[in-house]
Length: 507
Image 1 (cartoon, one colour):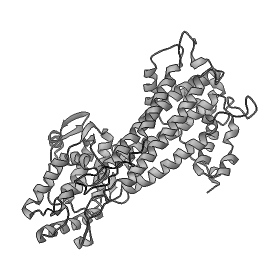
Image 2 (cartoon, rainbow, N blue to C red; image 1 turned 135 degrees about the vertical axis):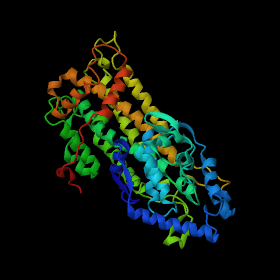
Image 3 (cartoon, rainbow, N blue to C red; image 1 turned 30 degrees about the horizontal axis):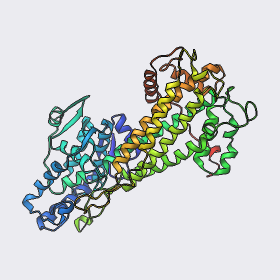
Image 4 (cartoon, rainbow, N blue to C red; image 1 turned 120 degrees about the horizontal axis):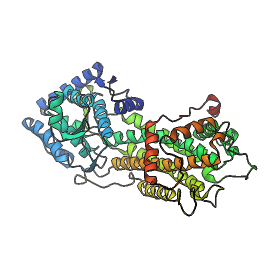
């Protein structure tokens, strides 16, 4: 059971809630803050004060005064009019994360909702009722209006949900779980949709997958180094300490650790003096991606505990401020960086694949084929990887550099953060396939060399991989192998390198 309080949620907690199905509950202290904030909203309505989104319209309509008798209709109209997302639904785990993140933001006590709103969001999480939310239609400011409107509709018993492996009407799922739909009162519709939870939820899922991929990329690269008889001198600690990037030092240490005892790796001058950059520069390239992952993690950690709606209520209602915390620029930039960083893991992996299959660049069987000429072997595996990295290059174009005015120019700069998060997620899926292809080729190469000469860690990885992808004895439908390799990457626990104190000398 994870207790939410609006300030202490961590990415590791979200990982457990999203993927392990952990239950969630609101803390008593945070609910007390929510009640006080709610009392302030009710006083505003009773006193007929002019406050954006409570007694006024929205966006360009902020100057339109709303009478007390109409404030509830205003909130329902807001959801109906803003629920205009299109395209494929977000993955179910993203929808689950959005519910958790929206509840956590409201628990900060700055939004003016009734506690029942938060209880219903958490009821959906605990019953595993996940709103079906179209991916497209958000500008990322004022928050993720369209996606969060589709989420909020489920609280009213409208829209559709993922429930027990099926797509069903919201009311059907609510009735089966004994959950009462609610009606919205002043400020509540706005508080539910004026936030960054779609881009942040997508970002969290993307980050968690990217981090896992980054670890896997290093063990796969280590197998490639064995398959190509790579030169270990390039991973000497002194080289990396001399530059000064901790992540680069850590990747080099990781590679040395994975390849300890290998009889397939070489020293400079044994076979050649230098390796190509895709082998020699693994610490520099992977390390730079790790730097970006750390940046993204830091921004997500802040955002998952942030108040991102508008207006915000302070000092028991004496201070109500209309600002712009809904603007997704911090996450937009982080998602663009994430996509670029993971694209580079794919780019360098594809170059290692080329070195594994190209007979002009190695002394292995051409294209790792059992019968070169009669059989094509891994030739088209490299084609597929090349296609994926080229697609990544288009997806990695920063979404955050774009903006377009909306709401009659009242909202004249927007983040496009949700587009950035979606693109980063797709880049990660593509990169996983590229790394799966490298793993297939690397396993084939090391077995050609002689797996008995492998390092202990890489050999154990190879043997587990052979449960999913058998040795290539003849041409077959390699699409199946790629799918199985991805399943291996998703299902099994891979080695995770933890830097030793010796690797942290530059700190």
